[in-house]
Length: 499
Image 1 (spheres, one colour):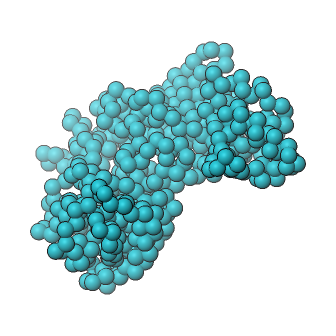
Image 2: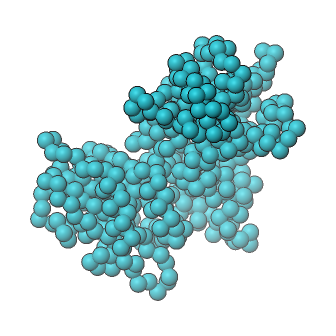
Image 3: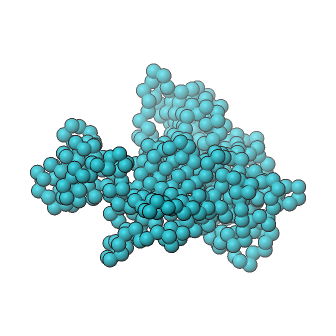
């Protein structure tokens, strides 16, 4: 909005959440839940309008109410829209009705803030993509507000897959494609799928073992894992990735490449190129079998750290496989084990509008690059709730006294490093810094690397130090570049600088 003051994004997000709570549920005989949705429109002149789902008529989307019923004759050039749920994409409504994403583009709104993605895995992120493809700048709500929206819509999210599947069966819509993996894979058929993995997925979705094979296949078609082609069912790229016996035969960038670098300089490679859903557990078991215990098991605290180390790694592997950019054909996910650290490499920068910086502080909003992969991993209890993996990694590492993992970028890979000790949380060229610390200072640093931000008072209390001593430690660590003040020059809050 040139020449205009930008709206306070956080304030408008919070307002949208409050408006969401006023949404009116549709009267439904089948008992299905309606989503709670709130929308806020900030016009170019600064005036603010709001709408909730069903506010004026049962079933009306919040964006429709806002744009068509309250502002039909208003020029909205330069307006900013905030919506708690991803605007529906073209094809989501019965023709000739326009989707909310199409209405936004036609209204010439050029900036939209989205709360959470559409919970159905086969339409997830397609409203966002339509907006982006048409020149709309898309942002996401702050993570804490996303969690509020998810909690308020728990029933709707649980039922979203069935609801959307039933709706899609009612008409043929022009599809929005997020990835070529949605298409059928040539020269493959059902024999290329691993039945054991498919059975595990069936169990995870609560489908009875007694279900007829054709009924299971019908569901897989609805979920985008199979496609009908010339009268036969053929795996899509996603279906082959997830459940294929050898997906790399058709998708060379699939799989996970593992390498252990032993202290004596020798290496041991291992490729995990079967069903994607099997790779994380296979990789973790391989490391447990091959590596010496990374931490002494003489006490309960030591055992906790050992267990958490592999939990962090497992979550990192899942994230790498689920969120990688499969369009980068020349790169594969990699797992590298070194004596001091464990590294997971995933091709592709985070999907826009998520940034690497948000990953690095474990506060990235929830958004899936490959929603269908995330959905399947979630149903099989291989991935945490959407977006909570990063949060749990931070909390688990801190609680176990391990250094926080670190994200970086080395083209074309996002690199996650899980450190096995405080000393490992340094780049090699900075390793000499630790030699300048006294034993008490090093003990203090070993605690600090388990945190993102520390305060003088907190450090003094945890380490049982006099105030002057605590301040001296912090001053020295700040001079060595290990702590960075937050705020004013006399700030008592410090960001911990790892590698």
